[in-house]
Length: 212
Image (cartoon, rainbow, N blue to C red; front, side, top):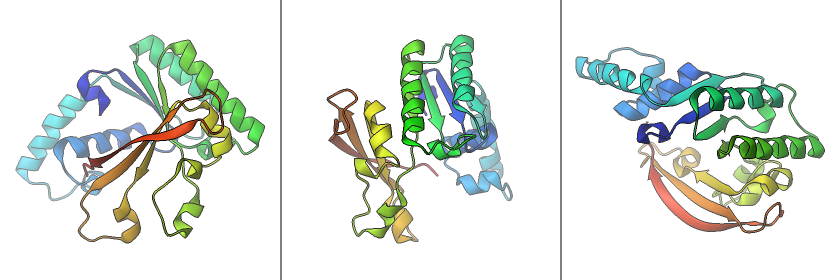
């Protein structure tokens, strides 16, 4: 978590609530499966001590969460401005795809307007905005399951406003491995021509270990 390095982080949750996100953070900090934290039972004394210590640490982190289920673009803008003015955040994360908004955006011009609004908001607040996006379900129908930049939902209307994209791939999710290696593949895509539909090119690749 970036906040553990001292970066002041704002998080707007469109699909989950703040309590759930904090439990996800704790799961990684104490190396305990998230499912056990969501349904706590049979914790050892040592685990309870780790969870208590981690909870105190997490409470002091420069991390502020706004959960806004069924939000409108205006709700997101207002939350971002409040986080910036109240806590001087360095970066804003928006967790939830376009389809999770209060009136799901479907028309191309609506998507363009939403993305342009986020771009202008980032400029207004002088901070990067990190937006999670869903991938097309058609990805699962082909033999090569690693995502390509064109697999982003509504790619032709979303990507022109993206400066950097990180595509995540967890092979264990698809193969149902009973002994997963907990590794996530991440491909990095960068923009070379602003607002170009073909301006994102792959420039790096890494493997990260998942904390569950």
